[in-house]
Amino acid sequence: MSSLLAVHIIGLGVQQEAVIDSTAQMALLNADCIMGSERQLDVVSRFTADAQIRLLPGLKNLLQVITELEEASVQNLVVLASGDPLYFGIGRWFRQRFDFSVLHFYPAVSSVQAACHALGLSLQDVTVVSLHGRPLTNLRRYLQPNRALVLLTDTISSPQAIAQECVLAGLDQSALTVCENLGYENQTISSFEAGSLADSQTGFSALNVVVLETSSQVSFYPSSIGIQDEHFLTDKAEGKGMLTKRDIRIAILSYMQIDPEDTVWDIGAGCGGVSIEMSYWHATAKVYSIEHHDERLTCLHANKTRFGVSNMTIVPESAPESLFELPNPNRVFVGGSDGRLNEVLSIAWQRLPLGGILVATSVTEDSKRTLLDFSEQVSSKEKTRAESTSLQLSVAKESVLANQRVYRPTLPVTLFQFRKR
Image 1 (cartoon, one colour):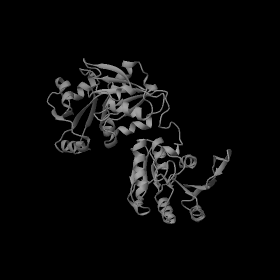
Image 2 (image 1 turned 90 degrees about the horizontal axis):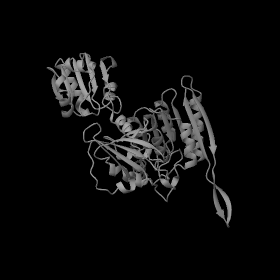
Image 3 (image 1 turned 45 degrees about the vertical axis):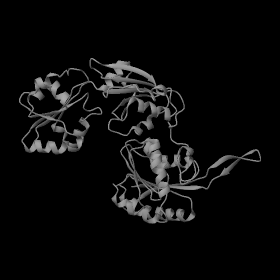
Image 4 (image 1 turned 180 degrees about the vertical axis):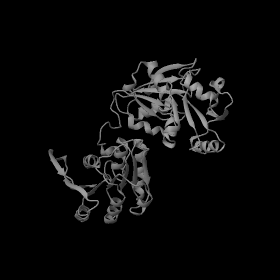
């Protein structure tokens, strides 16, 4: 936006009357255009001078509106925000799309800070989760015992809906504190136990922040890697079917070495054991789960909802055809290929950047031979040699035979890791 001289994003705090410092006041007085909600515009009306006043559009249309303002020779734009614009606010949207040299931020107290101060909670001791405009099921990855969560809500993530999620997780004794209308004359703070609030008809202001302190009860949702097999929905009996089993899954996660912003392909995702764990433990990674068998797809969708992993995208097609439309990966796991392993490996390797990791598993001797051949092939290239390693994992599980304890071995799994150098 080269003709824009400056974009000022001003936080108004959570008070009835905004307290705006002198630099923010000058930005308002010098603005060609000021955008915000009706309430926000009313709060700053005494500082608006001759500026054009506009309601802030939805984010889908905001860039187009700013382009039109630029074409109309607007050089100084003010955007009003509630609380701190760079803490779960609109500031991030601007930072991702505009050169930092034209951006000016004016922070204020956020609703998260106000809620913590109202309850005497230290900010460093809580986890902030935004459910505003996001699926309520996103909460599930945070529902472990003895957690302090500050939840930014909307009409879908009502206090009752949050309490119901706690009950489903087995944390019905958790404490929910609902902070309504923070900073206003009608501010109200009330506390409930999740089990009693879940079925309550109590009405709450739409302007609320929920502080959730989970109980010490055992949660359905795990707090460390290795989700129990029986917690997954599969195409066969509980914990069976097309699901990478827990002990092997833990090794795969270790060798994948996923970083926070990685793009990950899970090829032949089955019912989703590996995809779910990768998405669950790496909330900001983008995981693409490729699977085309109908029954497994049904389970994959169900498990995605069950564990609240909205950063996982299901690709209901077969590989390698489906891979061409996907963004380039940093990490690839190949768990199945329907007999086309050589093609899948070749395409995935080509798409990986330097430093990228490909992990594949094999149960049959045929697929192991294909992977060994692939290892020799990519290790001999001059420009993009592979650093490779492999290991065979064999697990024997406790069972009972004639009232005696025995350990029954499962089929050994060979795991290969390739890093592109």
